[in-house]
Length: 272
Image (spheres, one colour):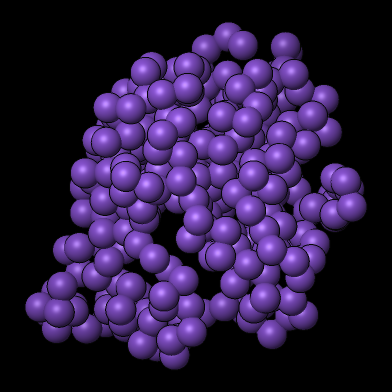
């Protein structure tokens, strides 16, 4: 298994890309809340590694990476990402950040602008006056079944009670998927997840977004109740060199709309 030590912490990562000459452009994929590369299929099984030299990793507190029981900050997460880029031997990379990963990507490009070539911010939020994503820290201690029932219509606002009643089998499937956490009993798992949500709670880049100068693609789902469509529009108004594309889906629009990742690839395919 590929682990790398960054400072005092060990991080689990995976790397995948096409066998081409010259090598494909480097891309760092930063995943969302609770991201764990053991959960399959994931970003390493999709379209991005067919076009780019993709590296993704379990963030601190998650998956197979180190889980120190200390407060985490968004700056910590951003600096971890910067260290990953450097450890790969890259001078800069495209960055795709999804949900919480998009928050980390914002901090990364603001703290280390020289490392980011082109940026994709997917279903994320800037916090502060620009709007925050749904406060997941408020539901973390709910019973798993109750939390799943609460979050399903937030993840996709089309999943109303009327929809659930009309689609009982599909709703039951969504419930099971939302509740299932095969690694919940691992040492440090609950603590690491809580530490991530604590850092997420304090995310706020709104006043600094106008400092992002790299080409940026903002993506969202039209029916996302977690990272609201209106929030994506606010980010567009704040980031100087940005464009916005909205897709048919909720918070998981990248798997709901097959055009979404294709549009990301089209945006990212340039010479570094």
